[in-house]
Length: 216
Image 1 (cartoon, rainbow, N blue to C red):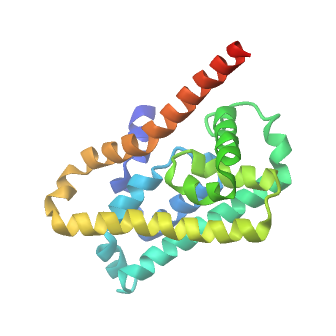
Image 2 (cartoon, rainbow, N blue to C red):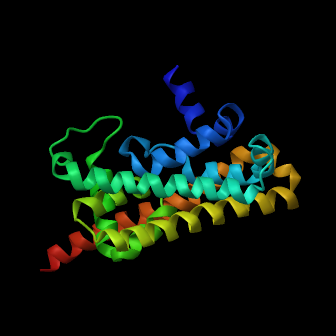
């Protein structure tokens, strides 16, 4: 049963089919602002939402699909603001919190390293990195990043992430209609493309660090 539930939660098409726009908005908000949302399928969900953008727009008072994209981007912006606030108010307590299904210390540490490596631009770059994007705004709050600077990068990052992923899905969906019948393969490809570079980065970075220690 747990395996079936996991497969369902990681299936972006399920959110579109059974939850529609409102569930989509919640998922993007949760994945970018609540540390319990790190396992949600952000990139692949946006891609699939792009494929179904016109259908989603038709269900929501027949508005232009660009309005749907703006709404989703705003959900991502609000999510990051909540993450920043949470990090600022209770960040120190997170280091004392025990690991659970919804919280892993390694994810917080990875986000912190990512932030330290890329500076303020991390707020934009992290949008395109699974798991990292959930914890970076929390880290930004913990280190008390300048709120105006955070707000600017937050807005730019959310619009860049949402529009790029959804327009890609929209364009490919129109050019290759058969893509709807191959979504599982596409989703797996998106997950691999977005996660493998991060895994390699931290794996090689860790080895390099150990090598430097030995050299010293």
